Length: 343
Image 1 (cartoon, rainbow, N blue to C red):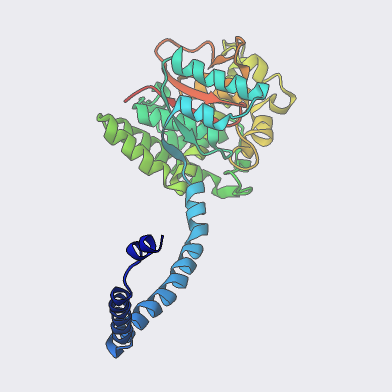
Image 2: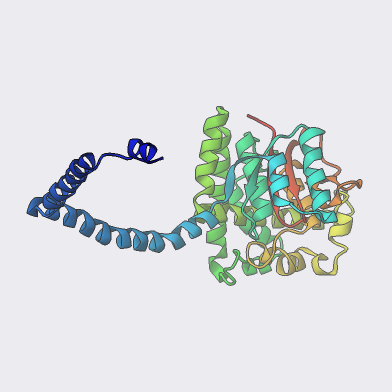
């Protein structure tokens, strides 16, 4: 047994040189680290880290609010897979979540619409979604806008006995007074020129690029929505006059003018239109007016109506055959996103 222990143990004379070698390596390393040059290099590196790291974090925190603000200002979102969007937005086992997921799946599979763009959900949302469709698809101006100088429409409305048009509100701007005509002329001209210019771009990719640039300019973007609002008001004045004279009017007018809050153009402007862009958006009946004004067939997937006849609605229903079609989808008849069917 003693022989076995002797054979398995490292000889003592071999242990001492190993210890000496390790001690020598540690000693030399420590001496090198104590060198003024090495100490200086380490000090510079550490001081740089300690100085730059807090500065980097401070700079990041200061920029964070601007990142959030810029993110909120994104009017038109990037291309998104429609089916994945539905599954991400509507997780859970509730009946509502299941209905929404099935609605998105139906649009994806049965209607063969694979992509969408999310639209910023403020009180211009419906106007933004429709205008983006108009411009990005290259839809031409309606004939009634091509055939006249739209900048003269405000005075035309005024001379029709509608002197109350001076009370027209530009979103959150409550009072403009005599300046209303000048502002409207500028906004209407901007709206028509931008529409004509973007329609003239035949390449789809370039046209979409120009649209995204336009919708990133919030000031001009809002001016165009206000122009759309006023053109809708102009059409309401014309329709109301036709109705009084016993002429044919679109079917939605029966419901539109039956509301106590919009029985005539003045009440429509004061009770509904002036709030659009400020504290309210377009109501469903006003989507009919939007489509009629710009000669559009607005087909809308109303997801919360999935499984009923109202799941796919059209504004207006009695549109002309030659009118162009745009697609929207909504989960609540307030916020609209854009299904994408083109390349």
